Image 1: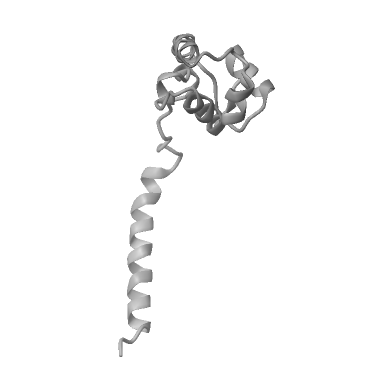
Image 2: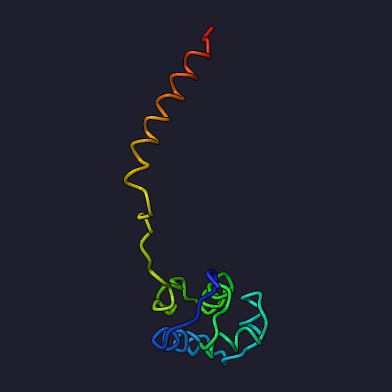
Length: 115
């Protein structure tokens, strides 16, 4: 789930401090209602075992007064990958593609008359 995130252990500690400042319990009605979500989702947020939708995660953080949700999220779950730019035949095909594009460009420019 690319648009799903979960809280880190340190993130939950930050949320816990913010929650205590508000005087809310972990599953307060006012909290999940302010975040426009359900109590079940708030419980999943606290469990941090299964991810929740990113936009809901952000709303839960904002409802308790935390604006930087990136400090709360578990970063290790976000895969960092490099694009795969190597494919079979790339070296041989690139020069041919350039030649073909130039031929097409010449053909098109000879057919198009500018008024």
